[in-house]
Length: 173
Image (cartoon, rainbow, N blue to C red; front, top):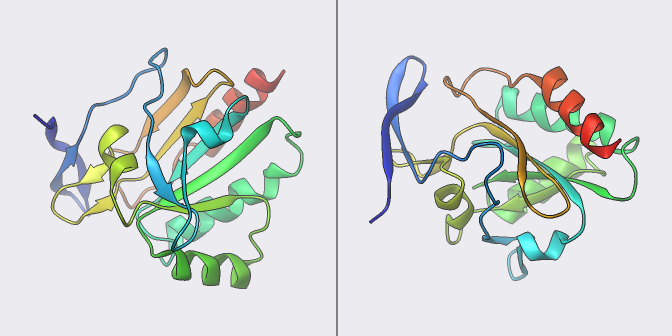
């Protein structure tokens, strides 16, 4: 049975239902299948041994999602070879590629949950009513243990960039 968290978040003040568990610091990060492009699927295992900042956005074609992705792209170059930043949305890979090219996003890896919604369900961010992913930040260590998590209560708000980046830098050492 799939867990549903009714009213766990809002969109413009209206309650929405999130599908999947609410992950906590210390949890083992769940596996997922997600698309890098239309035909190529990747999973958590593809980033084995890397520290991962996972930035989840509803759609790259919105202002807050755009700003969130640009913010993490700005800092990505200074984090070292053992860190990867993944931006996950349900946008089609074509749209993600267009956005990244137009916005100059070259350090963040955009991944699409459009096909299976397995990331959204595994990480508890799939919005049942919209089939989009709720805004969230996850930081996973090299062994895929959750070291930081922020689920946004209101999907139109920005995440706490500074706290997330401090947690990432502290983990990197």
